[in-house]
Length: 444
Length: 188
Image 1 (tube, helix red, strand yellow):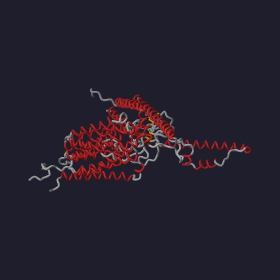
Image 2: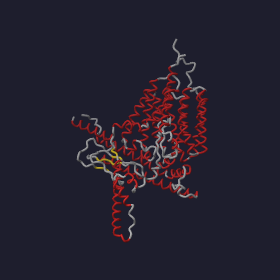
Image 3: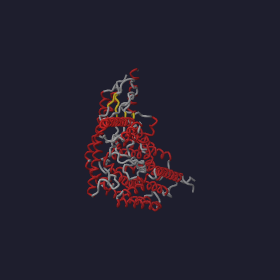
Image 4: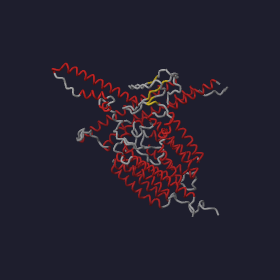
């Protein structure tokens, strides 16, 4: 039997999604293999984005950052050492070296000693003045004109829209589309991806617009474009609008109104519910989990046009996945959250944080069993996904019991590879078109 | 016709100014001294005369926010001035809030560490001579306490920040309305 276009497309898509994910993960690993060892040692770190398929929520980029709590401890006022170490003028160094041999004045040489003291004082004041000037010049150089450079604009907009996170969100949507039953429609698929991507860019930009002072105070986010003044807030909001309008229009008129509505709803949920809730209540985590769950649902509704059980199953899987992923991550960011005023379970209700993470690891086992029941996958799926589900549940249990950095780190990293693998397995075990369906057969 | 052309130029110049950053101006007046709304915190920085853009500085040591030197255009309208002053005030208020927040955090954190170390019977310095610290699990109590203690402060900050941002957008739109008012329905 010839492979139906649908099966072929599913396989291609599986391959593509797998390839994307593998590539992105590999890049993550390659960027800092040993850096991963340092993660969690210092809570002021940034994370690589495998926040897979987490619609519009958080992006983490690894950077080797060994500096301690820069926000908490103001830099010590440089007295002599920084300037001398840099020695922009060798003269200053020479003067200092000259100063050292000067011993405290002895009586018979009191006059000479006084003169020497004066010279010493003068030299010291010259050095201090030079240090001041040095510092002032150094500070002045750090001031930047707030002029938009068109060459830099693509990079700036990419960072503003959290382009890597958006890419991952789009890949969850594509997984949802591919898992949906029915013939695979390439134009619809591409429009869905484009529309979702634009909506995600818009939501991320608005989120950054709202959070500038908070982002400034966290190491993970202090290099964002608005924090650095690389673009104006007006331009950021205009960009968001220019993404949201065509994105939603594409989804509504190019795909179907249901998907468009879900897109609008998700933008609203992220920017107007999740973002302010972060500072008010721990309920933000649950709202954020819904935000992450909607993109695969959008992929499903784009393919089928309706919100059926399969859509909810996929949404449920992404929803559950958010908790072990985020709760484990937030365990290491408690200091920044506390100082910044973010209400997170890891700070306010640590036991709940770990309990919820474990609960949802176990829920993933249940959801993978529901997949064949709802005709989304074959019965092979719960069997072959059991090992990875058991493993993440085990790590969830360790986190629950041990409540330390090591266990939280392990759980977080497991979640990074667990989800892409889980979705890939789902795609490979996708329920083929039923016996009653003649779509794949040529007409007689 | 002439008025239409000049109107269009004004629109374009205002749009460009808005997009490239507040306070920027397309046609700098050569020789005119640059006027700035310097931040009230002591900063020796003075932008170059010829620049007609805002300037943004390095993160402040205490608040971690980057100060902005707002450019004052020669023909600044009263509304533009109001907007600029509002932004200036907001910046200063933000700086104060976060500087205070971070300093308080640092101070209370050190007090907490000292008291815990004392309770454990340990000195402030470890055997290696480095400053003794507590691990993250021991600090968790402090983070929770600090967050709940400062909750009201943050709520007040968030409410005020929202109010100010609404005011800013209102003033911004007022300013643009004044700059190029909508044509009346009478036409001609």
